[in-house]
Image (cartoon, rainbow, N blue to C red; front, side, top):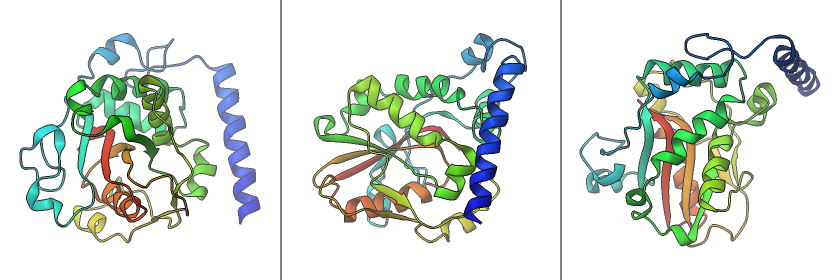
Length: 242
């Protein structure tokens, strides 16, 4: 099984390389040749920020988890760069993740970086922060060839001179893609994460990064194990929400 998956992942990478060499880049949203996301489509993605609790939708400062929900959830807040219902953004994310267009990560990471305003950083202790991406299960990572959340996390780390850790949070349980799951089924998922033994998280502010937030369940599961490992605060940053 593992050997077959390795062969398949190598074949996928070879196919991607051949596509890059033989075929010109086309815009993920409109198909025009020349760029992975053309200038016109880039300009149609507007930064929206977050002003509500991810769990109940009540208004909150910067997307902080409201007082009512905080007792039942580990995640301290969620800030999203843009709304998932934006057609260009949705098409770009689909091409990025499911058609293996890793170069889109560089473009989309720029939106995340620009969304992190001084008001966002005022909500936490940035001097003690570490950036951690939501990990893929090893099976899915081998298949896709890259972790989209890691691309976003590294963009944040580089832009704000923050350390990035991509190996301390581990996904040990493989769930099927949540893209078509109902709200109830997402909430019922068991926690798929664990933290490897380490003192690195004690007292830290964790900037937890993912591509898309829906119910917040995945991020909350990760926040729970990060806090069990000693993190003082876990705030999520995503490219899109919805």
